[in-house]
Length: 422
Image (spheres, rainbow, N blue to C red):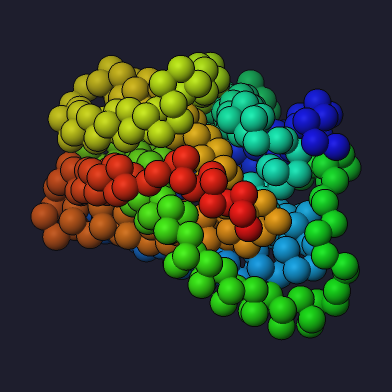
């Protein structure tokens, strides 16, 4: 039922579930463990290059699959089924990191790629269910609620995992390395358990008569071609997607590479983990406040301010030299991270045809993840060839500036009007 409190909460709790992967694995322990345990090189810039390359491979695969599987989901009314499939693909691969031994960085990257595919592809169908649980006037609130719960849920498990790492003997764990490996298991269990509400309580609207998988594939390709044509016609959607592609790449690169960057310039693992905890718990109220802020100044203006904020964050990141600098950086990121993600998703929901939400969100996620093909390896490669990781992080500013400039070309009112005619 649209705007049902139960369905909105159940939908939002999937963010609580899978954000454990984004925090403990993607942003937190995997970059640290990869550089200090799995990697066989002593070069900090080379290991950064390996990590950025792994992220890009996962992003390429999701980018290729996203619009296709989105079209299939719409034609076969299979959003929830595909969400469950990709979620549990990610869950199994995350748990599998437990078995990867020291020095086996290739296997670690393989499991990470599979888990990232599950995480990113699952989000295509999670996002596409937003119109099924909330009306347009509730998009901003519901989208922000999801991100806020994600920060709390992911941050709560991350806090437990950090305590396990810092005080392993208190938990009956022999050492910090074992604690990190156990944290991967805890993420898999957390992700699985808290995915149950969306499975049970979110009802997917039946847009089409049920069709078999072979028919869905055939019709999905046809719908995909049709959507490409429509995106050319829906110029507001196309322009927004290009702008989003650029600026969200900068956001995703900072999320995924911040800990690796901090390690490369000499900060301790414990200080970096503390900074990540700050992001999680400051971002929870900050996301809700930013949603309120956008209602006062307009959603598009709020996204502009977040892009400007990230531009200054990137510049500040080049000059950090003390641990408290990194804590300040974490708080600054927390002020904008949830807001720019939630409002971008909400703005896109307003300008797309509602009866083709999964297919259009496939493009949305495709461009967001396709951009991650460029950001992490660009940062890693520039750091590698210059020998200076600070120049690598500085390169990300290009993405924020170009994305913000393209966003000025997006006419939100025109996009809402045209979307209603489809």
